[in-house]
Length: 146
Image (cartoon, rainbow, N blue to C red; front, side, top):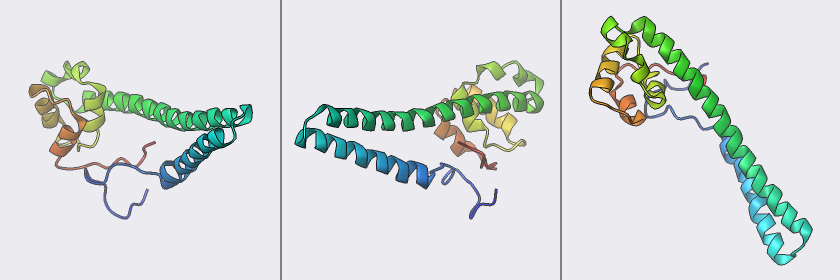
């Protein structure tokens, strides 16, 4: 996938404008309108409209969280396989010690720096994904994200 600029720590988060801004914006406007209508014209219809507006927002948020959860599971599996092929024997047995958050952050590291980065993460018990990502010197882009 061609990108305007190479992916890095500073720009790796993904915002999908139609999803994050337009769709969520429309649902929020609908929720606010439904609340307004319930207080202006109290009725069963306006109450049902409010409940549906809230349900639409919950549906949007849960759909996103479900997709991200599946993505995280795939990344965890991918990284476990990648680590089995790249880590030296002394670190092979420690692969189960990595948390999903650590593996998700480590996926951006190049093959060359991954073994030493893994050693540092385990030795220093670095658990925060952001801290791990900042340690990466040779960023490997991931454009295939949900």
